[in-house]
Length: 254
Image 1: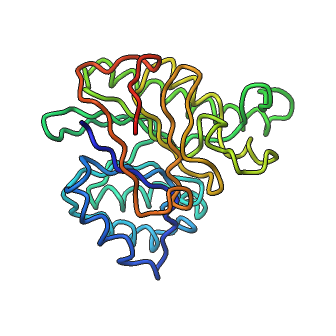
Image 2: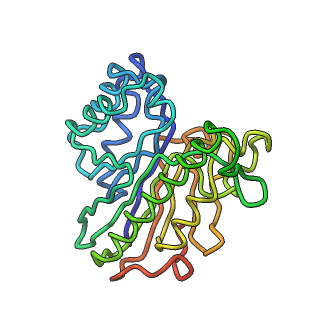
């Protein structure tokens, strides 16, 4: 089995140093890689991201991350991304990476994603330029995720995982006020996942949401925001198999 450890929304700051490191050091005993689903900092400052980098640097398992909205707040996403990459973290935005563990090739495609809402209650690419750009940004994120997943499909990975900050489905937002659902995710991400195929989708962002969900194509979705999972990380299991199937045939993640 492929063991996927994941957490998001850890919101670290200068007073957080060392809080998660002891738990992360146990990862080789229970997981093959660690996914960080965005909102790693409180305000997206380099000082805060250096705290995160020290928590995950030189771990015995690969670490793959996407940024969240908090990580963009200080308007220095390139700088905080560089800090993570210097610590050995694979940071993705419309990109894919393949890590090898226990003889398995695990592909991860990632994007921050964006809002816009879900089928029947979603923003449209119409009207004022700022509204059209809002939806276009969501679409660009989703298109990047789809292309990255398709790339992994061509590389013959044993499993493919979609890593985002914003949610691809409304299921995992249950518990959040309906009024803010359009700001918590977009159906365009789910369309990308179902079109390209994945075995598991992992996201954060929805602190009051629900852990378990599913795309219409049958891909299991997990909200790993730390306030939801209530621990340093949660581990999901996927079967080892060659050339991961499309979303409709994906195996259940426990």
